Length: 268
Ligand code: GTP
Ligand code: MG
Picture 1: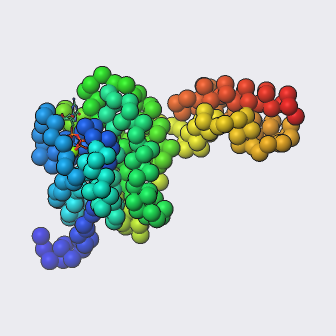
Picture 2: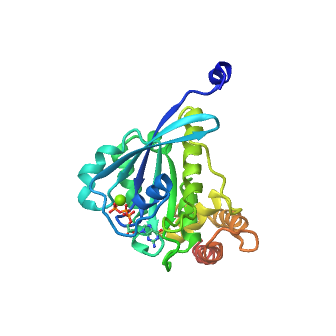
Picture 3: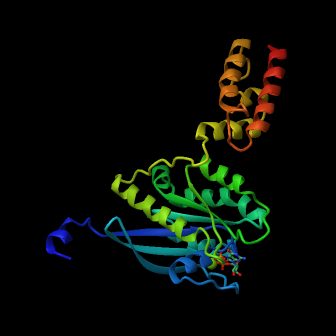
C-alpha cells in the first residue's frame, strides 16, 4: 500500500467483547466456530474465563478484538465479575432447546448492570442476542427471542455453532455496531427492527401483558376519568389493532386492551 493510502486509513482499533449466558448454551462453541471454523461436540466447561484475540478488517480499518469468554455457571461469578468493565460488545447466548436459558437473559442483564454500575456505560454496549442450537428441537420460538431483543434495542440472531448458521453474520453485526459506536463518541446507534413493527408497539404489548391492573394496562393512574380511558384506549387501539400491527402478541394484547377498557368504563 502506498504511503498516502496508508495515511488516509483510519487508525486501528482495539475492542473488548464478552460472552454471557447460562452454562452449556454454546458461548465457547460460537466463538470457536467464528475464530477457528470448527465445532467441538464434547462439552468442555469454561473455567472462570477464557481469553482470546482475533483480528478483523472493517471498512479499511484493522480491529484487534479481545474476546473474554465467560463461564456461565453461577460458581464462577466471583471470577467473571472482574471482567465486565470496559466492555464494548457482548454476545448474550441462550439455547433454543432449553427454555430456562432464555428466561435467564434478564438475570444476565442484571449482572452486567450491577457490575458496570453506570447506566450510560451499559447503554453504549452493543449486544447481540444469540438464539443458539437452532439445529435442535426448540422450546423457544424465534419471535419470542426477537421480541425480547427488540424491546431492549439489541441485535438478534438465530445461530447454530454446529452448522455455523448465523455465526459470521452475528459477529459482523457486532463488530460493525461497536465500530459505529466508537465513531459516534460512545453512543450506540439505534437498531431498526427488521420485522415491520416498532419499539412503541412492543412496549405497549409488554405493558398490557404484564400490568398488575387495568389502569396500568392503559397507562393511567387510579381515578382516571371516562375521557382519559377512551383517549388512551384509542391511542393503543391504533397502535395494536391486529389488522395493522404485525408485532408478535398484538392480538392477545388487543383483547386485553378491550377488556381493560370495558372494565374501567363500568367503574367511571
Ligand atoms: P460454559 O463454558 O459452561 O458457560 O458453557 P458454554 O456456553 O461455553 O457452552 P459450550 O460452548 O461449551 O457448549 C456446550 C455444549 O453444547 C457442548 O457439548 C457443545 O458441543 C454443544 N453445542 C454448542 N453449540 C451447539 C449448537 O449450535 N448445536 C448443538 N447441537 N450443540 C451445540
Ligand atoms: Mg464456555
